[in-house]
Length: 111
Length: 113
Image 1: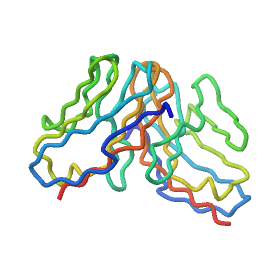
Image 2 (image 1 turned 180 degrees about the vertical axis):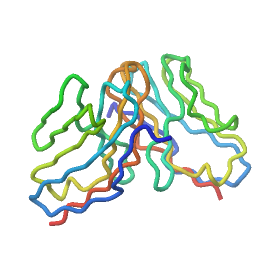
Image 3 (image 1 turned 90 degrees about the horizontal axis):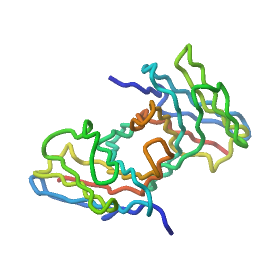
Image 4 (image 1 turned 180 degrees about the horizontal axis):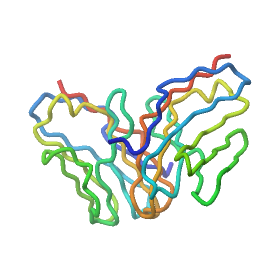
């Protein structure tokens, strides 16, 4: 029973265009959401997060949107760059509980 | 560097053998987590330590898996009588506390032949 779902295993985007990665969750107790980025042979690294009291958080080229009523969040990367090619994991938690991760979406940014 | 380190980086073992995986968290981080990522799967939570105690062991897949943490620092994950389905990348992460950002190590790739 997956509590965090990333339904697209892969995504290809042209350099300079927008990348949109989607994530759905089922647990209404989740109140904090994160995106991690993972390169091959490395551990995931934190990218951006959002609290359930917000619906948008922006950091440079990266923006995360949260739609609580739909239990949906998305990560927008604009403009996409070849160095953004990686696996992106969505994660969620409720207070003081471990993160629950999705299966990841492999993003390929094509030059 | 003062990041999370894991050893070994790669481990190949025969079915039925025991293996020990080690994690050195960032100094001062009280929370430590073990995850595994099997081929084509996401990050599967295994166990969480706060200090030396493990308030959440719910993710350990069977009684062949155990973990300990000593001195509030280094942790070892032990898999007894390894099976082929144990083959995965085992990732360790640490954080200042359970509500803080987790920093991941590079992982140990375990292959059970």
